[in-house]
Image 1 (cartoon, rainbow, N blue to C red):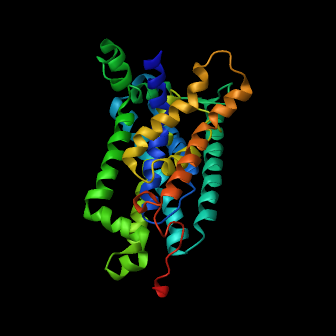
Image 2 (cartoon, rainbow, N blue to C red):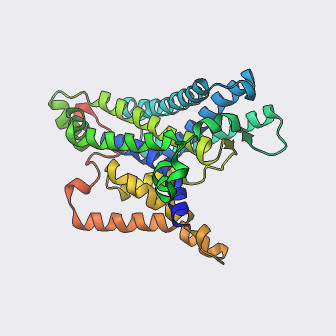
Image 3 (tube, rainbow, N blue to C red):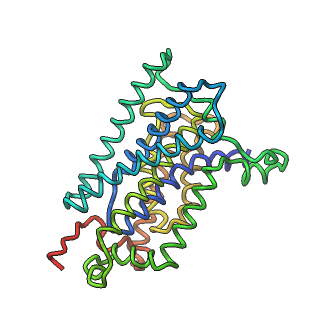
Length: 327
């Protein structure tokens, strides 16, 4: 039972890990992107569109492994990258308010996903309001063939799809890049003081654009993982829930460190599903337990604010537009 719970907690936490890693990279550049929920939604529906069109064109019986993986993956990356580009154009080039822009992107992303999701449901002719992409999902959900023979160890550590391991690798690489490389140093400088970074010859706009777009692409993979792996290839409008907001909360919990977000994502995933493992629990108590990730985040935020350690604080220019003329 414990191994099964940890396994489900990890699967529940992987979308959060993708979203939080992408948002950490974005926020390190000084951009506060509250559009992450919408970007993850667009990443998911973009992958669904690509997969649906591919399955319809060749038929479920003729699906090949490489196109079945690459087409949804590329569609998801392109869709989420475009969302990040829109955000950057509005906030970096036009210097629009970052909070308003992010919230608008979330609203747009959910509406975009529901519109195209509903359209695909009508095209598929399903009696139920959902799209089932089982053939493609089976490729995404493949695990190591010997994982089931290793008992609890295989269940906890080896029984996940390739996207789950990619999420962990990306988080570790992002952590290394931010702390150990010149690019990471420049990115952190842009987030802390863009005027100083600009005076030192760092292209502030370029770093903001690249960090935000790459961060959006990573977050979009969280939506793709949720649909193709966690939900077994089933898309239903508004089924994504509040995972995008949990990913943003996880950024604060991880004190802007992608490596810590690996542990935090598993913790949040466990808190999100723990009510399913408590016998004879009523609905109101379930909802209270689902609040626990946000409560934990508030506690961490209070502790971090009280300790005032600079390395655990958000970038100094987070959420502020940079006007070079004011340098």
